Image (cartoon, rainbow, N blue to C red; front, side):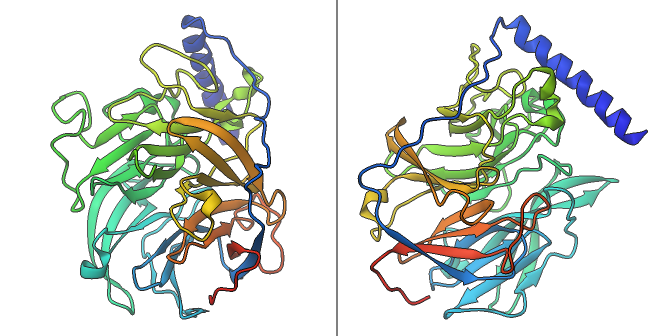
Length: 397
């Protein structure tokens, strides 16, 4: 009975979405898979396993002293240092709820981490009988995390579409992506935090220049809206533009009624703008709403996002990379400002589902597999953190 009720509710939501699109006189376009190429400058690379037998590594960050912190979705924060994985977790989140696609997700370090040792975690938990997401700030002592301070809480969440990517922008503000929690209407509603990009000060207070801070009908934390489930975020070197990756419609949205799937996106995300969900998706256009700079159909499930800033791979400088779960690859976008010049898939179906991607201080590129998330085919050492180095270069781990 519960499954039947869920199906009926999703069907009604889908009919509403179809009506919205029809009223806008927009075609339902099923796009073909984007053309990928292998640019002439693609370097020869070698992939090494850094750590194995992990569980759904969602976030990877590097401290100024070279330590690597990473988050496993069941709630563990772990440390890789001096070429070794520390056996015991640095910290286990006490109130995390692991459910479906949610659990411990986003993690980032304060821009002044070397001085204040502050680390931020975004995770799902139970509140008032339902699942929500909150961000908690801790102080890292070397042995554990202490001094917990809730930065924001009661963000709508669910087993699916819970977000959540976390990061500090060039302006020193804390940004957070949130999912629509399978409630399609939330993306367009300014009185809820679901389906948004949020912007906060580092202590959780609200910046006075946020776009909706003076509107009584809107949450002042909101930076952008109309998102479905963005899970990748970084800022383009030079321009400072925020790029996000976002999951497009899936079966849970009843898209079989539309005979369309995919619609995964890369967006340039700017102050106060509306990114369309659930009024538009794919390559649809509508006045006052932003269309993605590129979309992927069939779905590849983008789960991260990183601009390469290092010198180890000169050809990759300022390129945008993200891990693809369903696409089982790493996608590289070569950009000229806002324009995509070319795109390439790396390591296709070599390591399975790829989630996080991060640049190490030495310029090598780290990525994680997500083959133990219930949708993959885990191998003996999964999940793993791996790193990419030039074929002819030897680097100490």
